[in-house]
Length: 271
Image (cartoon, rainbow, N blue to C red; front, side):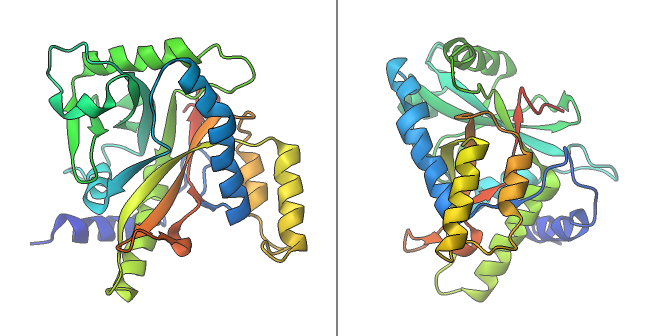
């Protein structure tokens, strides 16, 4: 009998031939731009969290098991979902101790994900609360922590509000396949963690300046289309987004599977 990992790899191979969702394509952001986007979060977005008295981490780690849990659900002949939604929520313990696992997230940003098919969610919500574990969150409770975040950030001037990040299943599978392939050829030092790094979007002028700088110093190929694809996302300046980095057993970033963006952002790019 196939394991979940084997099933997921098989699904990944078939999914790569399917149409892309939301017009989104997997982007490997040039390193100097990815670093600037992460720095932009630290110098701009993070200020909003601190002013609201709200804790956060700069990156939220997923184990390979966590990633496979996002991708795999038992289903019949037709796909039950076509994308994963990662929500930004402000967790406050108002639930009579029902989520003791989330104690370390009290009064902090908590990432909660769901799966959806088109505009319809499966109404299953999971918070990744440690490197290797996740916890199921009741729909009503999810609505509470989601609104807590919305109330703080929706009307902040000069920063694009992000309710959730949409990851097309086919793109997440494509990324997963790259990690699996890397591990196949690096058995002595595998990728064991995927860091979901908070980042702030850059405006078109800054992106173009960084691209030219990268071309001038040889860090970006003149024929690369990755910056163009990033510009086509039409993120708002400073809009909260995420970048995916692969981390190996030595706790080092693996450049081959890092600086990846497969995102559409809601509300400005909702399905």
